[in-house]
Length: 307
Image 1: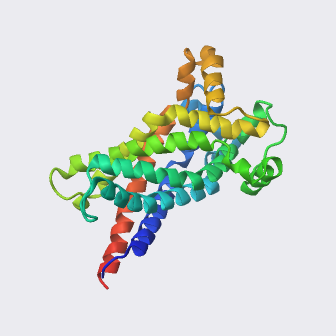
Image 2: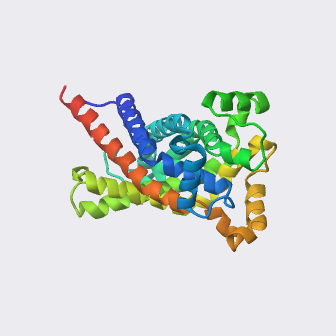
Image 3: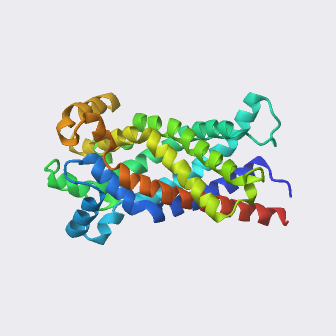
């Protein structure tokens, strides 16, 4: 059976949703630690201290605060990302002047992934804002920045609408775009380069689960190493704006570098608070993401080919 563009887009969207689910289930506790350490670097000495204090103060459920919006965010982001990735690959083929069935180079795939991430940002930003606020709510109360926090997704959503209106969900949009567009160039580039390495002249489609896990982990690691400071600024904008008007990307960036020099030896290092849990999560969660994506996509393509 010949697969048309609409059917291919539906397959990519569904496989992306499966990948997004696997990503959250695998990496949520590390993502929670990342947001806490990014937003309040002076509260935690490191990843172990963050895990211990979170468990003592909030219990095991504290590691899964924001899981619902995280699931929505990742399913929505990866569905749109992988659906648009397929379209953007076709656009890249037209730009370079090759047939639509021609395999793209690793660099061309990286460019397609970068273009696709701009569309995914529009669905990611609102859900990530809710997730980050839930994850850092306890610290906002401890620091005295807010008097009473919200403990549910709906209470955070209602608070944003009442305070800032619908556009309030897009606080941190510019920093999210600054993270996603270059980040996904390294994400897809690292993934495809790693798959090329493991394939060693064979077809990439023949790779087993271990090479796919390792390739996904490598791609995720490339993304976060490249754009982590931008993500740190984004988290602060989205969380600290709960307490009042927060400066934009450049204002927050300069504030972190200037005011936190005493905390972290050099102000610029404050932009890397929470990097360790991020890198652990990046390898595990993105390995699971690509494994779920590739296998669910193969399964659906096989089912359709059988008709």
